Length: 276
Image (cartoon, rainbow, N blue to C red; front, side, top):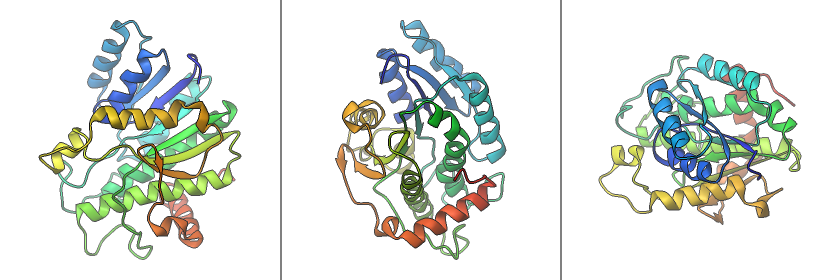
């Protein structure tokens, strides 16, 4: 990655996304930061810019609204001449402040599936032409070790709902669609990998779930940055990492029929056109 490379980070106003943005900015990487709050984004961009780095450009969207995701993608396509890396990091946890009971998005989808998975799926497809034009490019999905198999007869979890089950399903969906996309793209154009950056980092999502942390934020930032920048990973695609170690995901991620069923369902749920 060169200093002129452009990296888009979703969910960049807190936690891992913010830490990664600050780390990359210090090395002169050209950044586009996403968040829900214009006020927070402006404050962060001003702080990064005042530290001697280039002020990041910012885009606002609520990932619980697919229409806003489309508008954000259109804005990026209109304003950015290239996109070298998409870090799909925006998400919500298994509990508060987004509730432990079942809730739905603006589009009527189960909230955690919508925010943690469907929005990133749609954004990736919407930005895929720009990524391919910027080859070699990368997509990095920030997933989790917490994974629960998808029930294709009840993707919206209308039965036996828990916030933990919904969160873990959404994270496995990220990994599975990453595998599906990687299989469709030449690795010299766009690589697609997913990772569990670190365990119980002291982030807002973790603080809302538990009163203790295990790994540091710096560990998570370093593991994610590796997938974003490491030249040794050029051409590495279709994998899941636990930190910096390649790891096997939940077995459903290697079920070809399940992966294809998810791809088809995701296109239908988001209204996205298949690029293949």
